[in-house]
Image 1 (cartoon, rainbow, N blue to C red):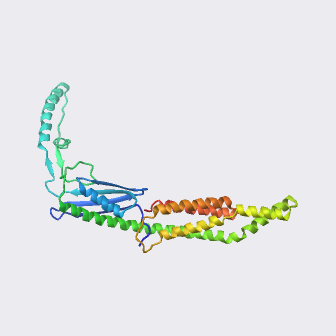
Image 2: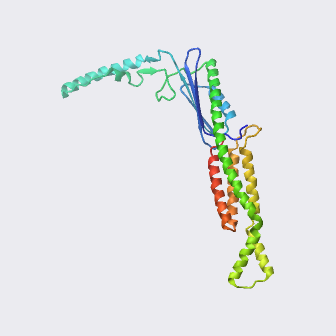
Image 3: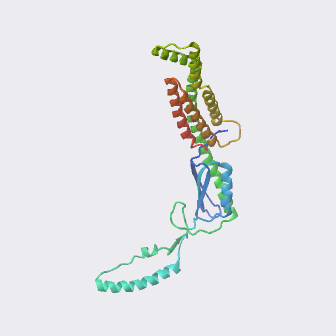
Length: 314
């Protein structure tokens, strides 16, 4: 089973109500979020169905800001009807306005014209029952839906959610490949550090000896060895190296596919990136050679790149 999923994705589907051919459309899209946030928008009242949709969503999605859009579009040919009460009221007022305009036309020698189409578009004159989820107009739809319609919506939602999840898995596979590439590079750099560790004490000894020779002074051999031991202790990176190896191994275990039930790993991976960066900073402060400093800088860049990608992981 895949080990990681992306938090971002989009999926949409539509179906028809077999009883009346009304079109039901559902779309799900998601962006990154620290926690699970869901917003359901539709052009009619869902009632208790919205709670069931959120329950299904929470069982499938663990993190991300999820937007669910549900549209029920009537296919009735008589979708547009006149609101005669509002229309008559408008016409009555127009009659009064006409009288006032006639007086002004005679006084000012002007000629105001009226357009029936503009009257028809007066707010509230016509009510459009057909409504698309992307339309900004207000649609008057039945406030309740039948149990059969609820089941149709739930079935479609489950299909869209599965399609949405498959897209997250596909994106997760891409993220996995990127992280594995970065982790392999981290392991290469750590292998360089491991190869240098046995020689760090002798390098400190040689560096101190050359410094003493440059100063042209004599020093007691026991004092010299004490100074070498002190410098070696200060520049000892064994603990940081071991922890970096351990954290790197943990990252690989989290991102590689396994037979275990899926578990959201984004927060764990983000924590490991923090630990990797902390150990790398300590290693950089203890680095006694320029090549170790360069390696520490490369490690920081790689860790920062991985952390940026991990922000997309559920």
